[in-house]
Image (cartoon, rainbow, N blue to C red):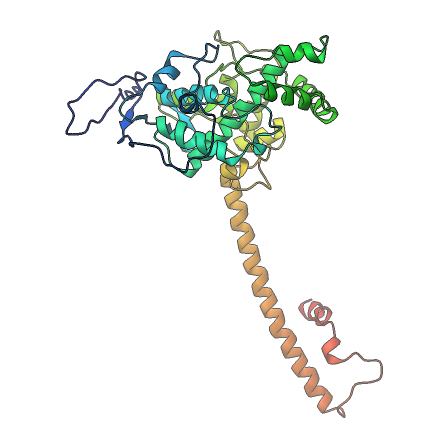
Length: 388
């Protein structure tokens, strides 16, 4: 199957203006929108430098690329058109461009101050400002699920940036004052001071030690580099014309360019996964080899996908969606059967009560001493005897 051609750069010009060749990323579709004459007057307060607020400082960094710069200089209200897969993940070249752009925004601590202890602690006004004035200004996005993915990606990149900064700059052999002097010039003094204080807290250090231990147990590195799993899977499916399974993606993402495994543990996991996939469903094989899925992510699928979205249930994340459907169908059928039997039992109990009441009337109107009241009798035991 031949690979479909990717969209070239597309632009729309208003009838009153002659067509012009736009500036922007190559091989990425763009769309034009009318440019508002001015921003709304009720925008939240942000740094005094409005230009810096709407166009982050493009300081040289290893995260920066010419393509990201191209996004910032899109003219005439043009926006990059994103492509999404069936799981709500950005793919193709536009997906990679979005990832680079988000990485640059997350590294700008004027947008998301480094002094906050958690992503959830950053004010919603900051996030909404970035969404409306940076993301939506350059990318054609409006769907809530897309916003959720993008904000989740920004949060992860923000956390990764903070961790990288501390690892690269903090020196435990130096004094507190000397470490303060190692502050990057693009980070305000008060942010760097608050960040270092947070990292020095006993609770933070304890959590860091646990994370280091957990990371040390992850002995199978992937080989995809900066390309996301979703984009790699989409690329393979475009080339082969068929669906790429999770087991195949695990093998691909843990092999070198020459086809060899990254290490012996990777080879053992792949072989075990392939063997288990022949004995049961692929998702059950994953559970057998790796254990249950994390509540907020699914192995070898990528960011933004949780077990409930992938499998339809979090109670049995390792099961396939088809298996869950079968179990649900059987459960519904059993419940219906039990309901019918309960209704039949109720009818039998009513009939038995009527019979006992009739017998009482013809036996003098009372039962022998010690015999329970008719309304207190456990008729279930009688029904067991009658059904035996």
